Image (cartoon, rainbow, N blue to C red; front, side, top):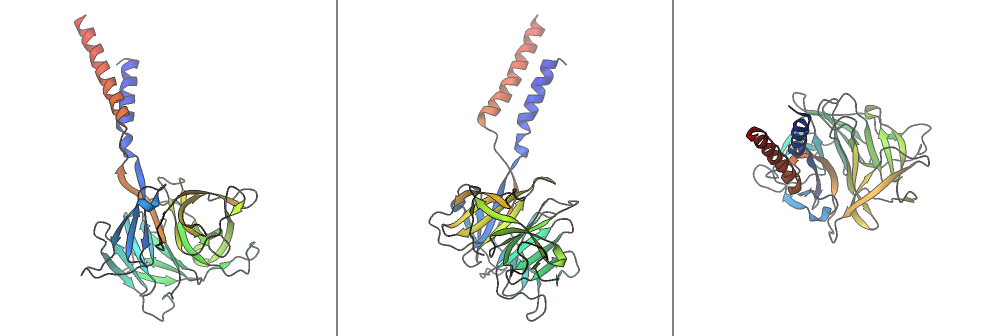
Length: 317
C-alpha cells in the first residue's frame, strides 16, 4: 500500500467515523412540575417540546427535580411534596415511583426548591434543598432508600461564613459511568455564587460569583436548575437554567474563578415569550449522531472514486 492510498483510507475513515459524536440534550420541568420539557437547541431553548408526566394509569403527576444517572442512562425525578423518587420513561412521560419517604421522618423534605444529581463515583444521588437539607438516594440498596446527612452550611473561614445558604441546584463533575473521581458543586441564589459541596459533611466552600461581561454579577432567583455535561473524565461543561430580572434563560459558565473571584458566564439563549416557571436541569448526551455534512460525504466519496480510477489506469498500463 502506498503512502497516498494510506492517506486516502485514513481520511475516509475519519469522515465516516464522525457520526460517533453526539449532540447534548437537556430536560427541565415546567407547568408546576407536571410537564417534562426537552431542549435540543441550546441557543434557542424556547423551541423545545413538552410532554405530560403521568403515572402508570395515565393520571397526571408532579415532580420537583430531575437527575440523569450516567451508569444506566436513565432519568430520575424527585417529588418534594410526597418525598418520593421516580424513574422517568422519556418516550411516554410515565414516572414509576422507586422509593417514598414517610412524612415527619428526618429524611422527609419540606416544601422547598430542590436540587438532585447523581454522584457517579458511587452511583447514588444527592438531594439538596434551599432550607439546607442534605439527603442521599441509594438506588442499589435493597430496597432502595434515602438517608439524611449533615445539613448544608458555609465552612469556617469562607467568604460567606455565617450566611444562610439557599442551594437550589447541584451537579457532579465527571458525569460518566464508573468515574474514578468527582466533585459536587451547587448554586446559591442568596449569594449568586457557585459553591463546592463537601458531600456528607455538608460544608460549603465558595468558588465565586457568576458574572456577565467579566464585571456584572448575575442576580438570579432559586427558580432554575444546574447540571454538568461530561463526554469523558476531566471534560466538564457547566450549564444553568437561571431566572433573572430579564426572564429565564440558559447559561454556561466556568467552574473555576478568575483572580477577582468571578466566574465567567455566557448567555446562550432565552425562552422568548414563555411565562412558564422552569425548575431543575438535566443535561446529557442523548446518543443521537450528529449528521455528517453533505460536503464531507462527497469528499469521502470523491477520494474513493479517485483511488479507483488510479488503480484502473495502473492496471491498463
